[in-house]
Amino acid sequence: MSSAPRVVMTAAIAVCSLCGLAAAGDSVAVATGRPLASAVEVRIGAVLASNSGKEFDQRLASMQRQFHTLFAYSSYRLVKEQRQQVAWGEKVGFDIPGGRYVVVIPKEFKDNRVLMKVMVIEGSRPIVDTALSLRDHATFLVGGPREDNGVIILSIGADTVN
Amino acid sequence: MTCREATNLLPLFFDGELDARQMRAVALHSARCESCERDLRHLEHVQELISDTIDSAADDIDLENLWPAVERRLSSTREPWWSRLRAWWSDGEHVWITRLPAFAAAAVIAALVFLLFAHTPPLSTPPAAPQLAAVDNATSIESLVTDVDSVAVLNDPETRTTVLWVNDPGPGDAP
Image (tube, rainbow over all chains, first blue to last red; front, side, top):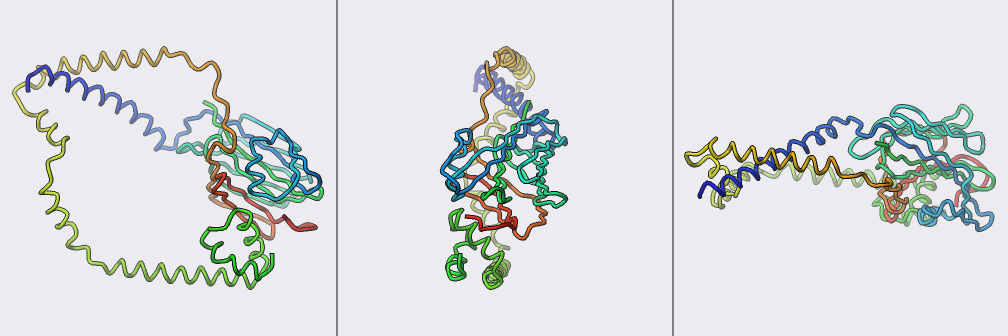
């Protein structure tokens, strides 16, 4: 082979190597579990689901399919909603009807998943104390606590902030 | 849900073939019903036995001659392109005379690419968080502690949504 094609080939290989090195930097950051997002916005919504009436709160439109597939209630009303940006390891507190309290503590961001601790407390009784991971921008539901002839369904989500 | 209904659904429940609503109903029923809970444990036991049998049968398979056979087949295959490329790379009398200008050219191209991306203006508005139905909401639960009688974890494959359903004692039943 003449020297000109070899030079072109060598240049191509060198560019690929440089790109590989740049990509490797990101991979190392992900592999070490270092949070790539500086903070996280926690979304918590409290929905009262019941069989009294046939109301569907339009603020819940993005979740309509989930509610109708998963549950058999006729009415869904958003009773409270909160969005709060926090640093990793900080907690978000949220009062829900029935004297209950929700605490969410985002722990870290790893493999595009947000690891968090979620607690639902009634008085001194932990109804739920769980550690879970969900994808960035995803939403997780906790349902069951009874209230006003219905149940409370909590939607808990997280959006990382760079 | 009655025991009779639950019993018919237990095998499907065990295999995860029920829809979310039925999963929840069976889970709640079996949490309260000793007989159905026992049937469920029986199904688990049967599956463990089957798994153990398959595992032990797999352990008995002799894989000693597998790798020599693979090696024989590998030796008859054509040399891959990267090996040929490596051979070409180390071949010849050039070395740094041809490689040095190539690396210089590569560095210039890399610098240009970097500058191009560095000066690309950011999007005017950040993309809004996708709606619930459009994202994968499947949640992995690492640990769970609860003070209530029963808890069911539901994964709806249709909407890829995970629900932690707490059977908090109170008047009436969950729908």
